[in-house]
Image: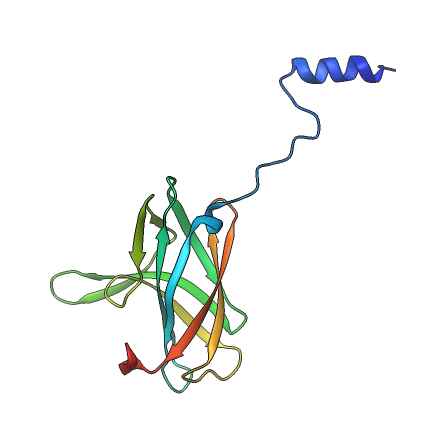
Length: 150
């Protein structure tokens, strides 16, 4: 049997540190969300979510998903003009560069919200959790607005 002192010495020689904790994810802590809203559509049609994400830190942050207890499915999308028409395509990730902000809007990045789990109407507030590549999350309250409310 190896003594605790010998085991510790071997552990240190291998370049390990005892009880080393993984660094806590911090990306979401440095991001700021503003003007978060959902374009409401009647009859349980898919809705769209928009916001402005600001990253005042010196490190890029990568959004990889979103979820909400109010919608069964929340996906990231981007609308692109291919010259003849606008196309909406799902995306796996959206990077917010360091010291910058990104506006989610109908003609660019946005979230598609499908299959409401309960009735949603204008003036409601819907929680959406944004998920980042580093494992961090950011809970944002989205206001539901009529399509013409902007």
